[in-house]
Amino acid sequence: MKRIVGVVLIAALGMQACQPNATVAVETVDETAFLYDGLEFDMPKVEEPSFPDYTVSIEEYGAVGDGLTENSEAINQAILEVSQNGGGKVVIPKGIWLTGPIKLQSNVNLNTEDGALVLFSTDFDLYPIVATSFEGLETFRCISPINGKNLTNVAITGGGVFDGSGDSWRPVKRSKLTEAQWRKFVKSGGVTSDDEQTWYPSEKSKKGDTAGNFNVPDLNSLAEFEEVKDFLRPVMVNIISSNIVLFDGPTFQNSPAWNLHPIMCENVILRNLTIRNPWYSQNGDGLDLESCKNVLIYNNSFDVGDDAICFKSGKDEDGLKRNIPTENVIVRDNIVYHGHGGFVVGSEMSGGVKNVHVSHCTFIGTDCGLRFKSTRGRGGVVEQIYISEINMVDIGAEAIRFNLFYGGESPVASDGSVGKDMAKAEEVAVTRTTPSFRDIYIKNVTSTGSGVAAFFQGLPEMKLKNIQLENVMLEGERGITMIDADDIVFTNVTIKQQKGAGLTTFNTSGLQMTGLEVRELEGPSINIYGEETKNFVLANSHIDKAEVNIGSEVDLKSVELN
Image 1 (cartoon, rainbow, N blue to C red):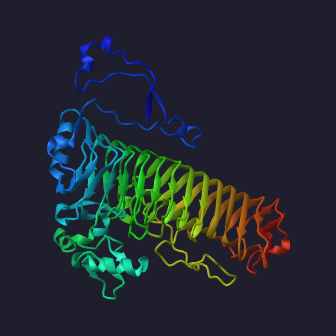
Image 2 (spheres, rainbow, N blue to C red; image 1 turned 90 degrees about the vertical axis):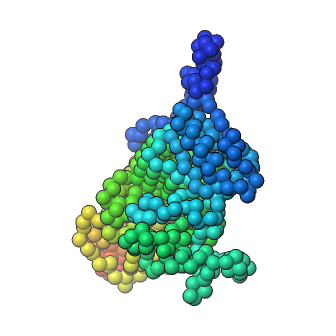
Image 3 (cartoon, helix red, strand yellow; image 1 turned 60 degrees about the horizontal axis):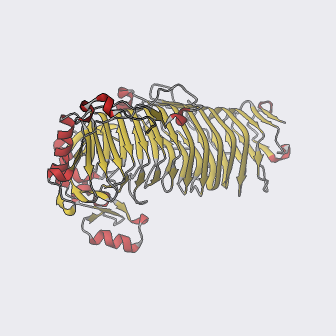
């Protein structure tokens, strides 16, 4: 955002400055400069779009804001003609604007005035199947309500609302609804699953929901995809392979699948947005940033049905082949209410994620707070992640969670607990498909009211590597569990668990803890298990040696308690 501080001397420039599409130089101050202060990695300033001083309203192209008239042609014609004429602003005024898909164009700022509601039609025939990427895989989906590809200099701004009519697309689990809500869905039409535990909007939608497809049907031809078209619900906003992209101001809500999905884009700014989905919405993510570079995400609010702020880079072989990481990203001053995770990396991270700064965020009632996930077969490296100044309250599961068995056969109980008889997970060969999480720094974090303080699980063949926590206070029902990790550093970490041990480790080496504090309860404060335990150091702590339980399989020479 740039603030004008100089005076524009129109007269000195002559009458030419008053012509349409004229560009006038002004002195500006970069109001995003504070985002780069103290940044832990080198990153270029993200370029913002700029547009000629030329404005049209969609009403000039015949659009009618009565909530009944379908305005696809008028809106798209306005955007296309402004782009073809050199660019400018297309205004959506106050009103209810029913429409089908909107195709963005280069050099256009789509601006919604306060009171403007853009309501996407529930007529599935308006959304043809197109080749795209979803869940990190190359596949077919229905076209997104807002879409654009290979664009330069594009924006969506203003105080309006975009509503994706997602309830008409999404299956809904009965367990997530009250009985009254369930009856309302059933009465609205559609069909239910054979066990009557899931509602689908149509038979086509039900047909596409086969076991194990993870929302991407394993089909071979476009004709086969057409048979399950209604199941192929789109992400609401899909921007592909574009440069200099700005979203500033609007509300995006009720998306059919994910809400915002920039993929393979550069110079992206997402700010001052309200991103909402019903808490029961299947795959109702807020933001999925995939294989993007040089990005600012700040001053946004999320209240969604799945992960809130999520970074991805493709899945399995498709992601490895693309090999484009998400990198150089600043995430700051965001608030997350409901969501499966506040800030999330994965699980589709085959192209890698690196150079990420996350700070000054608040998570209220999310299922997890900081969430990192992947699994064998995915590949990719997640590294150089810097997280600080995070406040979390009432996190349902883990405040901090690393899980490299996501969607797989984890050897750990669902509550993160391990015991002395826990068996080591089977080790497999390291290949290009082995994921790696390393060099992640977390400091100045406070969490209260979580189910589990933290959970760290690497792979026996690729341990979590160099994870550092500094000035962190985690309060919850249970403490920290750590499995298959290496070179872990805790500095001034406080664990206030309500039951059980504060810290339990299994096959973890190089764990260096200084100033650790654990709430005293009956039983040990720390459990140390696993024959691969090495270089376990506890220093400057008030924890008595008698409060540390060391498994018989652990070499006592590997444990140093000061």
